[in-house]
Length: 152
View 1 (cartoon, rainbow, N blue to C red):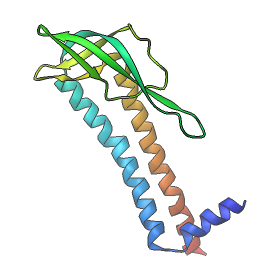
View 2 (view 1 turned 90 degrees about the vertical axis):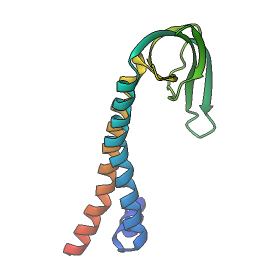
View 3 (view 1 turned 120 degrees about the vertical axis):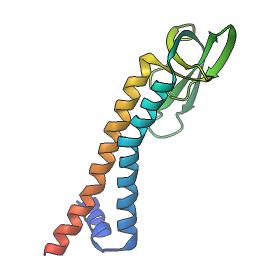
View 4 (view 1 turned 30 degrees about the vertical axis):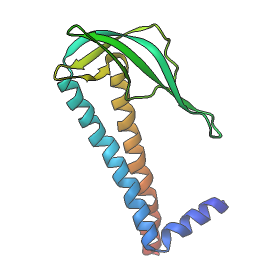
């Protein structure tokens, strides 16, 4: 109950900080819900050639916090137009992928270093959309507090 009162007071005192924080949460939500899927869709349109890549390494980040959550980024090795490429993926996974696994990759023919893993790309777009709507919804809660306070 004490936390609710502090949050309520923080967002009903009509300070600049309150409106700024609400705006930041809302804009982050808009970016995640609308811009990230558009960027992913544009990447899918650029990456048209299919190759099979092999996971040769997995790099992990995180794990230092209270939740001890780690993110795993696979490093892929693949061949395209007779040339061998080794590149770490631009995405992280919650579950550690198996080194030596083969994964279908879509490659940008104009820039073979740009690719996405077909297996994981579709879930990433959905995740960002859901998180974006969550941030937008979270930012509207303080607005409800402000409106209720003004109606009193």
